[in-house]
Image (cartoon, rainbow, N blue to C red; front, side, top):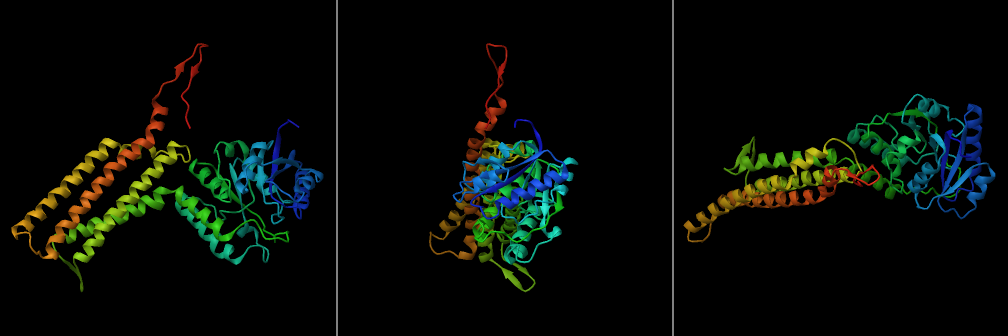
Length: 404
């Protein structure tokens, strides 16, 4: 039982008594026909319908998943798998487990992750709800390609193969349905070799509704994609908004601007100042997300040093104080003009041109200054981990600093 195998067919399970037996049998038939030394492993998520006994009677190995959820079952199964390669699939008889050869061939060719593509392989009538087929999957797959540069066309196919050790190295942790996105996203960020093979989707063989909840799980997938791509999801839009706002502030502070038949004045200046503040906030939030993700090991990449440098407390404090000084100077000038009138009524269209940019500069300066403080707090542990040297121990070995 302890000898390594080439392939583990992994089936996450939660009350799949109706279809589990046929899934195990199909996987075993495919292993035998391909002459592969392998196993069928069922990671059970707390079934109460006797699924465990059904799987064992059919010849599968069953392990209990302590963490509830689709991702929890798969993470547990990956840890217990004895195969060098793992092919995972739902236990609802919707995927063709008799045809594992395309996945095995691609894995043997050296690909780290082999995704099934249901749109290339074919989708049986009523096998996928129209909302998933024409909106959910295409939109989320498109976002995956845009945000992470993936070439995967079916981002959420439940049947996929992978090198077990390579995937374990990603330290996947999402317990819910968003595990499907986490695997692909983290693999892409780590530079893994990802490919696709056609696979056919059949109609779910169960009489009960699926575990998937369209809007809840769709949102969780979307949220995960946005959180893991702060550069494109937050920083870039924030930069565009900031630059557009600055252009408006610079153009409208001296006086009204007419473009064609449109005359822009103080009202537009208000929104330009607002765009500057919101854009700067988005940039800073994106920077925090980049720093946090890399310090905590959630994401990997080479941008950490750049963001740590940009958000260094001393640098942010200097820029923040400069902006506050400019804002206070503008405010003093506006108060001086007000004083010349005996602190009486002023022409609002004239005074506001000075007050708005000045207040914006003060607000932006405070935001930048305290952002540097927050970024420094976030990176203290990561910097300490990197800079503390290894300590010698009495037995001649070195004790390395602990990183998270």
